[in-house]
Image (cartoon, rainbow, N blue to C red; front, top):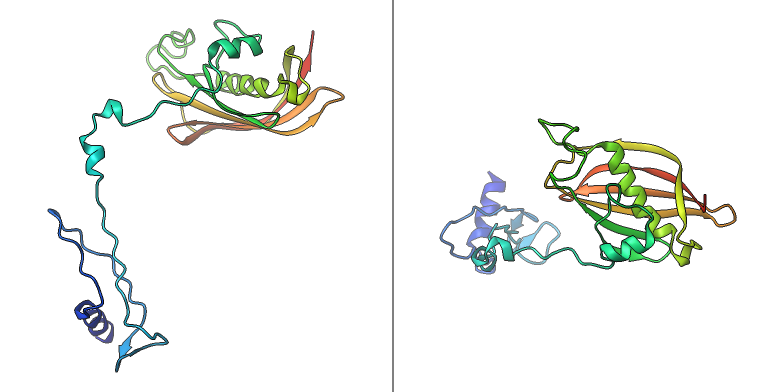
Amino acid sequence: MAATSAVGTALSNPLVSSPPLRSQYVPPVSVRLGSWVGGRGAGLSKPPRILTAICSLDESKEDTPIELRYAAFPSVMDINQIREILPHRFPFLLVDRVIEYNPGVSAVAIKNVTINDNFFPGHFPERPIMPGVLMVEAMAQVGGIVMLQPEVGGSRENFFFAGIDKVRFRKPVIAGDTLVMRMNLIKLQRRFGIAKMEGKAYVGGEVVCEGEFLMAMGSE
């Protein structure tokens, strides 16, 4: 009863602003900050306030056609620049664009997964899913973009898998998805040309694959 009367007092207080009028009223979410007794709160010098959370839609966004609402990924390196760095070619070049590059530290790139990818007819004819091993390969190629740059001592030669660990596949990647891959350099042994990296791949902001990679540079 005391709690009800306190909230009623707060709602009737002229210092508390009433919720704005809308075509659809959303009930406020109220939090009582202290009991109001004889003009003094429980340890408060001011009347309690009602914290109001109201969900609303951005009307300007509603008026914008859907094809104009979302910006494209930035392009730090296009496919031609990627081909100058990576030795891979069709059908095994699995990086379409680099959208962020921190020299000698990390790279973020995308792979546009389409039904025309040559692995879909066999994996699987009735349910096209990108093979997990190719997700790992695509992430390794993003790691190669970091490794084969001058900042890491790379000479744009070949690089090889030396090991993979803690790889997990969280969700299937299907035709129509955009695979966003981030690779971070954790440790580099310049003398031996070996690098340890960690990577995560996302679709729609959700992790679909992650793991740790050990790679080696070499000319043979």
